[in-house]
Image 1 (spheres, rainbow, N blue to C red):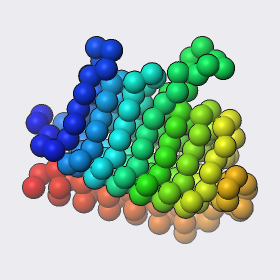
Image 2 (tube, helix red, strand yellow):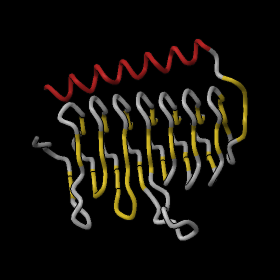
Image 3 (cartoon, one colour):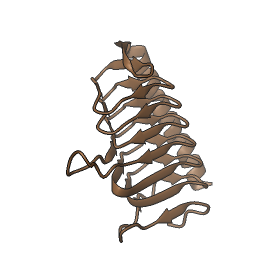
Image 4 (cartoon, rainbow, N blue to C red):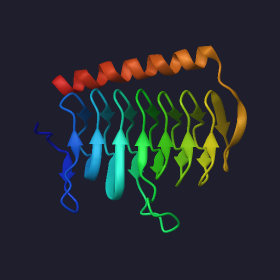
Length: 180
């Protein structure tokens, strides 16, 4: 499928694999060992660089405008630090995910950063502007905030429902763009 205005580059002989139903906005750069699943959306001016490790983006996940998703070759461990983002996850505008793992329905707030070896479990949230330092793990259902990020409180059912609505809204919006 042709994607006007999107830079898709192979690296070390590996070309990004983008599902036909995924939306990738103009201005994005997708490089190397990157897989983007069905219904996912990568919004304007994002960079996903899977050069020294791999990136996996789950179904219906949205990576919002200006975000950077990268990996690390891992001088401190042989397998390095890939970036894996589960299904129905939200990655806010201008976020940075570097060699981290986000579970299903994880929420990384606007301008937040998740560093090498860190993880955000299913149904967990890293607040806007927060910094999750290397190897820190946010357990399921928790909200962490600050620089460095620390446990703030448990998420409410209302907040989880709002996140699910946001995922659904982004999925609809992405398909509108995708078919326009």
